[in-house]
Image (tube, rainbow, N blue to C red; front, side, top):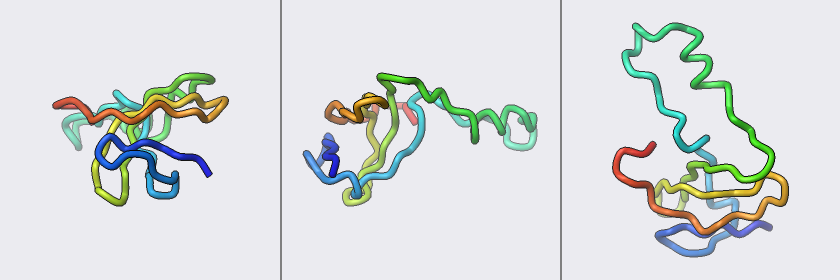
Length: 88
C-alpha cells in the first residue's frame, strides 16, 4: 500500500485520499457563455506527463485539499503542501 503525507494529518494510507486533478486546471468562468470545446478540455483532457506531476488531492478523513508532487512512473510522492490562497 502506498503512503501519502497530508500536510494537516501526516502520513496516511492511500485509500484515505481522493485525486482532484492537475494543479492549475482552472474551471472556466461564465457557465452558459463557455464554448462546449472549452468545457470538454476542462473536464476530460489532462496533461498526463511521464515523470513528475503536480496534482490536487483531498484527504477524505479531514476534508482538506492540498497539492502534491508525484512521480507517475515510480509512484513516489513528495509530502503534500497546503494550497495557497486562490489555488483550486
